[in-house]
Length: 325
Length: 201
Image (cartoon, rainbow over all chains, first blue to last red; front, side, top):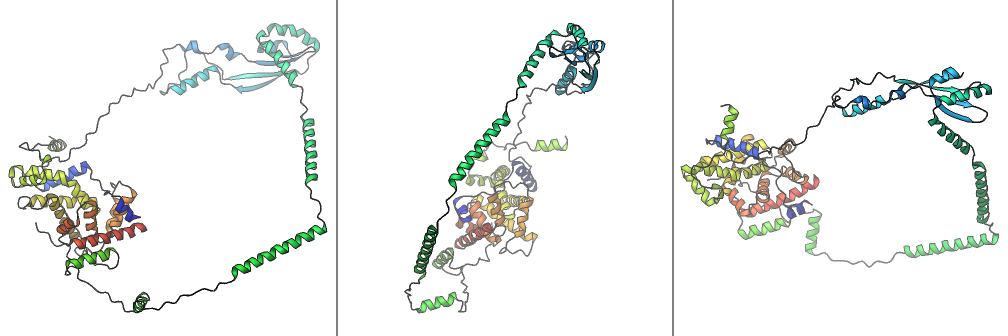
């Protein structure tokens, strides 16, 4: 592989002479020679690249825009939303009323679930956190008043609601109920009524399973083999024995050895010498030839012989005589 | 003036006293200025500019170590400067510089180890291949350099002069004062050995 590489592709020396290194070496040489050192190899000037990247704004100015305009409405913040489920004779409806109304008018068992909700101001502050890198996040807005983090979600379920009380209280409640929430509550009731109808999945699955079982039984019934008769068994055995005998006959034909025609050669004297050389029976004496002392045609022939691998030439000892300038 | 500023000012490229463009001179014309004291320095600097990198690479191929190569290169050109006026420039300038460099390499190896045998390989040089940080090349070229370290020095020299530096065998024979046929045979030996070494590596 290497021979083809060396012959086909010229490999370069891997050692690269750097300009700066060569300049330093040239200085050393000139100094050692007693010359005034000068720069021989012009150095590469490193181009100065102007930094045209626009500076990144790392701070957010709070005083420019009035945050009070962007602050959430306080009503949403302080209003405790109460879900009231009222059961009357006529209809069930669900609505949202204010906390004070429920406490005054209805006698309900109250389960208070404290939940932490992210209010609008927290969302706003998180947005500021993502863009602000100056650490000014903790500065509260001067306009927004302090807001409770925890809101109370009160779920009220009626324990005992008498029909009379409900009828009495219903108009009062309705009078303070937000009319915007009335329509969605009715729609939800309709959806509940629609979803109350359950599709008979179990019966359908039963039907499907029955059909699969019937088809499976039919398939098995059709694919079961009939029991073989005695005559067929006898016929199969006789066929197998006949095939085995035929195979044995084929093997016997293949394995029969053929008589070979052997050729005999007579060894001449040259062959005997070669045989002796190959079997190392002779005393192999290495002959040395003085390459330098030999004549030019002999040198040429010896080099050619060495190229073809017949002989090996030793190297000269006088290769590096002192050179005279 | 502080020392760095002085060094910086000394490195400013100086033009020759008389405006001769040495860069465009041929070798045979350039060597004629060696005997003229007025132009000798500038002609010498032109020789440095032309051959310093080449000689550094040649000595580095032989010695592997960059520090040794720099030392030998410096000695070569200092030797050239010392003989520049007395040499009869019958031979080509490049040829003469290579001869000087070869002698300096041999002298350097002998000075480091007086019992050095040039028929043997200096395998310890291969360690510099791993130590030197500026060897930035493909894997095959590094392998070849490592295999060269396992050649006897004579074969290595002939191979480097023929393969890397592009000398023909007659020139190498004249440079080493040897027989060209012998060198041809030596080169073939080197190639065969490199084939074996690279097959193993």
